[in-house]
Length: 191
Image (cartoon, rainbow, N blue to C red):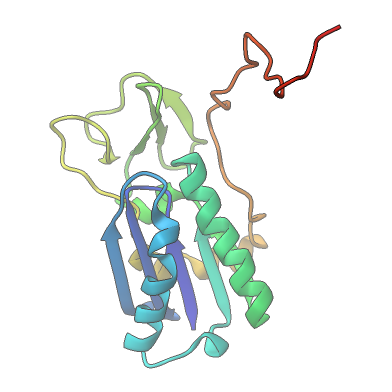
């Protein structure tokens, strides 16, 4: 059995697959960075619907992004913990692959831009995504979110490629800066 978790977008999804076939899937729309609140319940529900249990899972696959910083880390951390506790293998898949479609795929960036990946090309950042692109975050266009059900289509390719390292896939630099006025503890003096 293969367990796929996707937390990189507002739609948190989980699917249990036997090779090539989704046996059960659960998904829910969550507020930004709130996937951790429902992920365990979704996994329990999907395992129960598939008539299996955690000990039967041989592979766990996590959506590594791009997507929300905290959301992606929640999914990756969950997958690592699940694999550690059950002894199963662990894999990662980009959010682009869980959107699918065969053409250009887009994921929004918080900076008013989009991450786009065209077939056979590396992902890049753009301010004007292709009109034919599938994905989400573009006003007036149909939205297609990463979906763990599509994970059944890719695992053999991951194994053949030697499995990607399970680390979040961030295309943007962190949006943090040094504070203008450093934080001081009460009673602390500056020399």
